[in-house]
Image 1 (tube, rainbow, N blue to C red):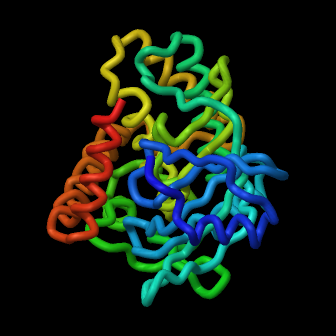
Image 2: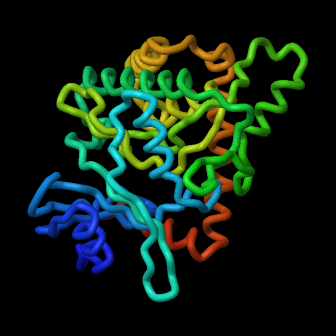
Amino acid sequence: MGELPAGVKRIVTTVLEASVRSHAQPTAGRVARTYVLTLDGPPGHAVCKIGGPSVRTGEVVEPLVLRLVADTTDLPVPTVLASGTLRTGERRQRWALYEFRDGERPTPFRSLAPSVRRRTLEETGSILGQLHAAYRFERTGGLARAGDSLCICEPHGLYVPDRGRRLLDRLPGAGPVDLQPVLTHGDLFPDNLLVDEDGTVTGLLDWGNAHVSTAGYTLARAEMRFVDWFRFDDEHADRLRTALRAGYRRHRPLPPDYPRLATVYKCLWLLQSGDRHVRNVLSSRGRQQIRKHLRSLLLP
């Protein structure tokens, strides 16, 4: 587990006026150094993250995104208790303290009861529907910091939503397409959810890769990560897709391009993911992230 850094102890003492009784490091995290803390005073538990830059812009945006989402929706996201910059020698890293939320990750996803999976998919669709209904932007792109605010900027590497949006906008006879840029989580899959025993989502975690995308592309990506990835039989897969769409329709109509172009969007997402992995292999920080992710997969 390793020793808790002295900087984290100072943060907790200064911000929460409490001491850390014990700590644990989740194996599921990929980028930020994350510590789940048990405290000797209120609030009893907290989560501290150090670093965690967006893969799209290289900036730590999660605290700003979570404050925005918490202030303007009722989604089950952790409250940001405090955030700032930690100096270690000549190195400066952003940190944030978050509310600890109860629940269990719905993993291994294939081992869950079918009714729990369907409920989780319906909740996931509802989350995306709320995000897409609440936030509208003029263009797609990565999120970066502009002081204490967020701004949209050109993301690193291949960015399919932007290129796909421009292509579909020019393509004659493509049919109706929802080109409205919307806020999306950026890494929505079972490991980044907390659920109760029925599959109701109690926590939506790890917003460090949030960005602005298009609704149809985002829904197709969610379908890929929650359904296609696990190779369910056709009947159950269809029920999960139906649940995802039903949840989404609670808050806004399905994007007209999603049912028609979902397979195309999934292929484009795989292309974008491949580009990101190649860039990771070519950078020292990217190789470090890959090693950390592989360790998280291999550890029990």
